[in-house]
Each structure stands twice: as structure tokens, then as C-alpha cells.
Image (cartoon, rainbow, N blue to C red):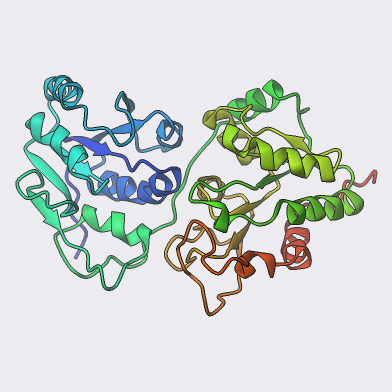
Amino acid sequence: MEKSIDTRAVRTLVISPNWIGDAVMAQPLLRALKDANPQRRIDVLAPAWVAPVWRAAAEVSEVLETPFKHGKLQWAERREYARMLRERGYDEAYILPNTLKFALIPWMAKIPKRIGYKGEMRYGLINVMHHDDPRHKRPMLPFYAALAGPVSKTPPQDVPFPVLTISDEDKAAALGRVGIAPGTTIVAFAPGAEFGPAKRWPSGYFAGLARLLQQSRPEITIVLMGSAKDAEVCDEIVAAAPGVRSLAGVTSLSDALAILGSAAALVTNDSGLMHIAAALNRPVVALYGPTDPRHTPPLSDIAKILWLHLECAPCQQRVCPLGHQACMHKLTVDLAWAPLRAMLPARPAAL
């Protein structure tokens, strides 16, 4: 039986997760919605720090940036924003965050169909309610993709990997803004991680890997990616490996996407930049310790996951409760160098 395709011009609002990596892993949901109804218009409501991810998703017609502060209810502001959304005439809303406050907006906007998980006891606010078994936490990719189908306890199978797209013009412009010449071979490192220090590979290890790369392939430019919060650890790496360039806090997320899209490879902790690079189809060496790559892996056939899976892992703690952070310290520089070296493009003929 052929799959039926809806041809009505449905107006859909997707309320984005608040984390970059989660937003990337939600992109296949939008693809499924668009495949089911090519005429569907999909707008995404997202915080400013996540919005650039959705602007790189082909399925999105418009990105609306939320004016709300993280963790604040801001009832009056949400009510006013809901009034604006009501005027847009959305037929349905997919509420991806599990919090109560994000379910309030489409309810106040009187959007007829409101799809999401139960989350924080959101009965009435969600009227097409999906349920997830907390005893068997499913990977985030099928967790979000399941919302495109009927309510079921069976997760969807064979969900496609996320795909983000950056134009060549945007790549060239972003590289130009940080003074990188066209045609330069770039390897990016992302030494930060939002969750906490337990997730971070030691800065000395990143520096050691940079020195190996510089010795083996001196023509390659190594750049450190991250937010201003990562500047200190990036400065430590630069001090130990002169010639490496830190872009931490220098680039916008839009430019970071474009630079990652230009990179020959990324070496990274479990972070939002890891998920972005995978969705841009760039080779990734992903370093895992206290978190679980079975739950939030880099979704790509050209990613290499390094995880020792020690007895104490995954502990999911911000700071190592045992005080040794062995899960990251035992991931040696040589363990990371082997897959990175295999990912590098061929050496230029002149060299």
C-alpha cells in the first residue's frame, strides 16, 4: 500500500528544545512532517541561542526567536506572545520541551491541535499526548520523531539522521570574518561542554593532539570553537600548542555552523557543536566519559565515538563523584589521534 500524502496547506508551529544538540536531533521530526504533507508550512519558535540551527534546516519557513529568559515563567510576556501567535492562524503545535511553561504558549494561542509528551503534568495543555517510559529511556532521535506519528509506545524505526545545510557563500563569509583564507584546510576542536567539567577531555590532551597534528600536517589550520565560557580552556590549549587559533567567544553560532561546515574534521566533547558537525556531514571524533553515546550519539556514518564505558560510567554527573575523572583521563591522545589521522584529506601534492 502506498503511503498517503496530505496536500492541505497546514500551518505548523514547532516549539524548539532549549539545547543546541537537542534541536539538531529534533530536525528529523520536521522532515517527517514535511514528507507527510509537502504543503505544510513549518515555523519554529526557538531561543536566540538555538535559532541558527533551525535556519540551517531546509524544512523551516520562518524562525521566531523567543524573548523569554531561561527558567523564568514571565506570564504576562507569554500571554502577549501567544496573542501574536494566535493571529498567525496555526493549525497545530509540536511542543518539544517537557516543561509546563512552553505548553502554555500554544494553549493560550488557541492552537487547536497541541502535540507533545506528558512532561510536567501538562494535561489539558497537550491534547495529543504521547508517553515515554522513564524506565527505558529511548535515544533522543526516535523520542522526537515519534511525535510525527500516532500515539504509540513503540518508537519509530530507521529514523534518518539530522541534516543541516550551509551555503558556500555563508561558509566563505564566515571564514573571511575570522581571517581564514579560502581553500585552507581546517581541523576544529571543541574543548567545552555545557553540562559540566566531567564531560571535558583535559585541555592538555587537546594541546597534545594539536601538537601531533601540527607535526604531521603543518599546512592544516587548527581552530578552537566554543562560546565565551570556553575561552579560558581554549587559552590554555593555545598556550601549550602555539599556532592554534582560539575562536571561543569570537564567532556567532551562525558563523560557527559555517566554519564547522568548512572543517575537514572536528574533535569534540559531547556537546552541541558535535551534533551540528555530524548534521553537516563532517567527520567527527567524539569523546565521551560520563554521558552515554547510546542515548545522544553524533548521528553520522563518518563519526568515531571514543568511550571507555568504565564501571562507573555513565554517571551523568557534572563533576566526577569519585574525584578522578578516569573516564576522560584514560582516553589518551593516541586513542584520539588514530581516527583523526584517518579522517584527514590527502596531503596537497606540493607538500
